[in-house]
Length: 147
Image 1 (cartoon, rainbow, N blue to C red):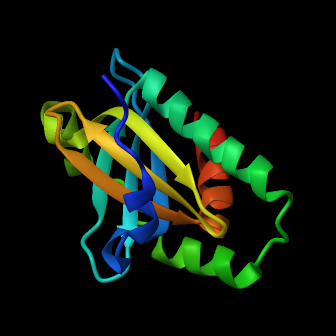
Image 2: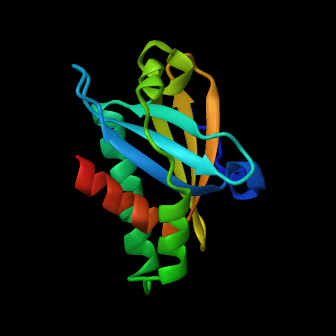
């Protein structure tokens, strides 16, 4: 089976752009993390990244950072990320029982200013997210701190 070309990820709409995210360790048997993504003018999106998949996400984030070099920290972006960070609540953990919210495979495409993700869920549905460069750095820190 051949992979689908990822060029369409370069044309994601504003509803896919992540402004912030909260990460919580999944203490269930499959490990990994629950990540709740905040997007402008969209409801928060809670997704479960089980152990191997969250490692793939971390690899994609690190590869993007390496390709783009050391970016200067933007205090206004860090403040916006903090202010928009959603709170992980007990009800978010219901994603464990919803195959459309558990990530099975990650495909990533790095652009100049963002990392585009195609997330194939356990029910085979697909979700798309775009992580601006500054958000990738902050999310990498969140993952490192939490896991």
